[in-house]
Image: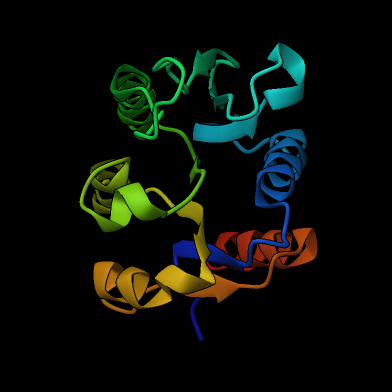
Length: 172
């Protein structure tokens, strides 16, 4: 059975998916894989903001602040649209420069609603570049509809990610 070029790590709120994807990115880069894409990092403890996040451009290492300050008492989404636009540019540029694998942090609420980095995920696949992402259990139906079922679902382990990549490379 051929390996799918689209893989999603299925996770629950108890899983530290950001750390797992960062570990996978480091391991794959150490193996010589030319990476593109963006990973989210929670940085609440670093800057004393309980909701602070940033995106890491995997191709350049650049950090992109993802949270915006909306003032005291705000209950609106704190994701900075400019940061998402910069993440989009990073992914699209990486595809254009011929990376071997794009990793996008997750297919989450933003992507389910048609926003976030949903279009960049589709563009990655249409360009023929393998895609690795994560999807929360609660969004599995939406992920299936988005991919038409043409993806592999992985457990949240480094071993599963590396095995998927090895199988994909073996058939290349």
